[in-house]
Image (cartoon, rainbow, N blue to C red):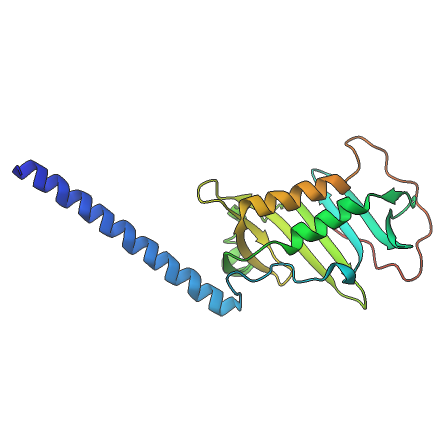
Length: 201
């Protein structure tokens, strides 16, 4: 083997070793963040049973909607029009299917370091009002575009990496509950006393 070929091989091996070291260091750093944040890789991002949910608020693209559980089905808050039960079921199933690939940390730490992940202005929001009080809020940020990951703000306030296709499924399900673009807002109607507070997105 010529001297030039040997030098080229040595250079390639050095670059490869550097890349492996970088990947290993990043992995250790992410695992450290996971331990500090209390996140569990592979754990559910939205750990809520569908039967607990009594109202759903969604927002994306400048549109928003609220649906409430009523008489064994779902209805739009305000005008009381019926909502496709399958669309609601798909949204709850998609949200429940999100799994943590990595937990990066609280969204406000280090002066907004996670803003570049699209969470300064989330592309879509979901808030579930739960039986007995409490809510679970999910915000969808941007995808990495490289390794099939996307970033979300989980109900516990942590920024979490999830599978991009799973996040896309949630966003599509949110879209199915939104009113058509340009549609007038529903006529307001008195809300039942037991209905949770309106979403303040």
